[in-house]
Length: 124
Image (tube, rainbow, N blue to C red):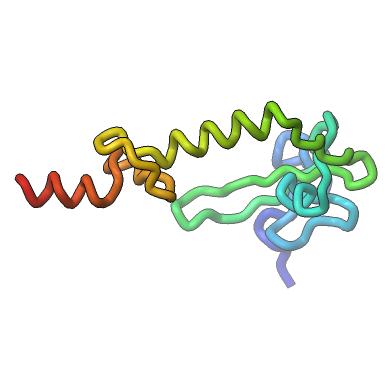
C-alpha cells in the first residue's frame, strides 16, 4: 500500500513542518476554524503541523494545525466592537445610488443594489 501524497510527519519535505493529508491530522491538533467552533483561539501559539490537499484550482493548499491543550477562550465581544461591526455591516448593505439599506451585502461587481442595477441596465 502506498503512502498518501502529503504524508510527511517528520517535516523533511515541507520545511520542517510536519504535514498530513486531508482528514488525517493527529488527535489534539485542530485548525483555526475548528478551534473557533469550540469557542477557542490559538492564543499566540505557533502552528505545530499542517494539513495539505490538492486544490480544485490547481496546486496545493495548507491549513495550519494548533494544539488544543494550548488554545485559549475567544475574547468576548465588547460593546464598542459590536457597534463598529454593526456600522461596517450597515455600510455594506447601503446602496450608494439610492441610499437604501437593502438588507443584503451589495454585490461587489455591481456596487449598487439589484434594483438600481436593473434600472441602469434597462435604461442603457
